[in-house]
View 1 (cartoon, rainbow over the protein chains, first blue to last red):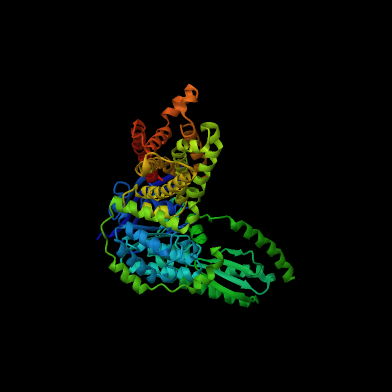
View 2: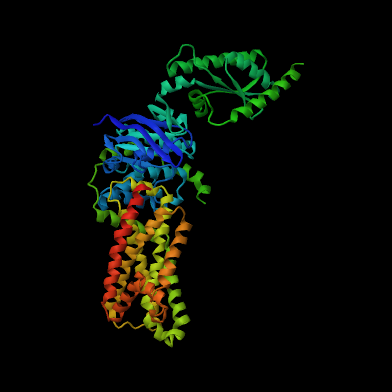
Length: 349
Length: 283
């Protein structure tokens, strides 16, 4: 058994003048879930397509279980499976027909193919929909048939390209359960996602990718520690008190406070806990700081309706890693903040 | 719309059984990869299933050919051969060739629409004989061409077409037409992969099909045409094919046109097969 599933060195793919993937180095251990995290257009899908032999790299090298993705494409193909962003099944065919088709193409005889299809449909809770065309499936069902098609032949490496984008929370949790079951069996999973939350739940190591480059790589704890523990979200009863509250939070948390479009909402980023270098201790530090900030708000006579301590969002990860937010929503928030500062003086008078 | 039904369906969805899933994963033993023929036939089966689920798509191999036979027999019959009954003896094999060759361009359209969908990516990550996906399309289409041929011959016989070549001659003609169409379709698979939209595939196909089919000996004998046009018509692969089919059905063949037609078959596959596969691998 090879202990490294994927190894890339200086992987490059260009589309015209656009360097979609611009020198990606990855080492992905076998038997784990590895998360590739980044916004739309970061180069995640292009990277996966090169690793799955769908795109030919323009530069660099990539090996899957020691096989070169260009020179030994067939050896790679016999070990991997890909579930793309859009359903990689034939929408005109029924659930059974899709699975039988793929089972036949992977070398199963007719009888074995139908048997395997029935077993998979059963395990994925799709038996009732087996005879229906996939185009009539719901989003959650499509994902399931898609993943069922991908594990039909027990791949050693499964690529899941944004498997939960567009799914409701319940279907998303079920996809997560499937991924956990697949990994428990020993299959390596390379997961791309836009959600830190998803990478956090499933992946043991994460690479953050932006503009075709890996800008951070490490375990979940390492990554979180570099970003900070997250954000405090506060909803006030009285919109007029927002400027006061912002001031209190700014002092108590020693952090920048953003006013949201909602006139009673505020968000503050919580910095690293004192001396903490692991993810766990950071969370604790953040919770303590947040509790202290709430007490300060109460002392200032500001009524808080609702409060939550959130994980760092992908925006915040990017802010911390690149020094620039993924979009410029920040400026408008600032403008709103100044307007409210004027109201504050009136209220105090 | 499927989106409207989504919430209820998801709520009713049976849970995923992770236990049986685990069993399945462990039980999964890898059979040897399928042979080139088995993979191609499996893709051909996929094409049949698509016909089964969307039977309306057979419209172009049933209604369209009937229209072609009726239209041209009665439009030109009186003027060109004295009577429609006389003309159909000459026209039918040619119009059969024209209709089926025109229908072949839908191969390019279906390749092009499939690329847009994720299923194409899945096929390309399978360790199978690479051309089998394309061969599968063509096998499915061969069935459509056979349906079109039967429909047109039936209509023709009702209108008074009496082939002297008998059943064997007619079967031979149809078989040659199917073989040629299979080879000719590689041109369309190439365009299907090369062009970006379904509309451009249609547009380019029309540009190729119209001169090829009309500037042939399908409607009239080339003798009355100006010399430069005769030069084109006499070397047009569709002329060779139509002449060969006509000779087979009339029981006067097989002559040199049959050899020419088969030569075109070999040439088309030898040129456009590799080009298609090169595009397919790079897509």
